[in-house]
Image 1 (cartoon, rainbow, N blue to C red):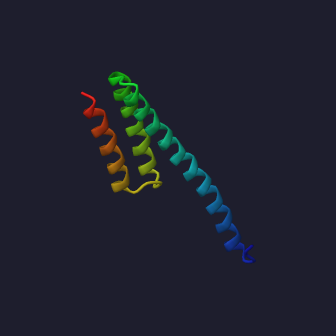
Image 2: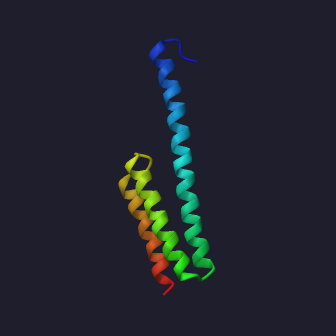
Image 3: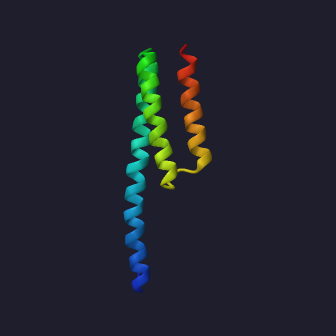
Length: 87
C-alpha cells in the first residue's frame, strides 16, 4: 500500500471508479443479451424494443467515459444489423 497521502487517495478513487465502471459494463452486457435473446426467440417486436433500450444504455456508458465512442458505435451497429436481419 502507498505511503503518501495523495497516493492513498488515488488508490481509493481508482477502486470506486473501477466498481462503477464494472456495474455500467455489466448493464450494457445484460441489455445486449436481451436483444440477442429476443432475436433467438424470433420476436421482432421485443427485439426492436430491446434494441432501443440497449442503445440508450450503451450511449449512457459512452457519455460517462466507460466506452470509447467507436466501441459504442460498433456495438450499436452490430445489434441494429442483427435486428434488421430478422425481417
